Image 1 (cartoon, one colour):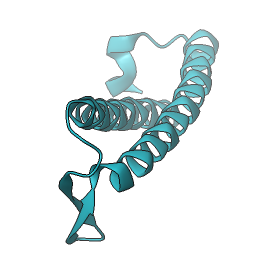
Image 2 (tube, one colour):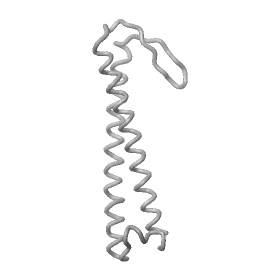
Image 3 (cartoon, one colour):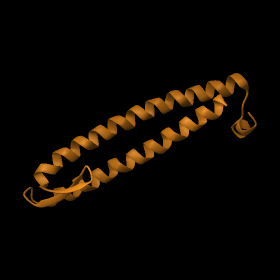
Image 4 (cartoon, helix red, strand yellow):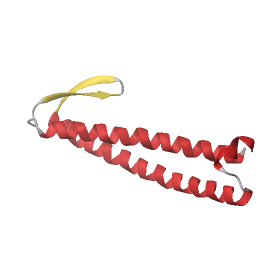
Length: 105
């Protein structure tokens, strides 16, 4: 049961990392699009479920800051994943599990 819990946590971290990396990529696409337009141009941003009108100059710094925060969370999750992977490896070595035999445990 403990092994399955570790496996589940590893899987959860992998999924969350992939999801957050996708968000970072989306932020990059928006920032790339902003490079091609003038800073005074209108743009719309979703804030708390409400669409608000701003200028590119107002929104761009917020997107960059948000992107950096997401990267920090991704790095934190990657560190946690390394710890869980190490725990998993130690568990396998200690109890002699093989990847396919987790269901039998």
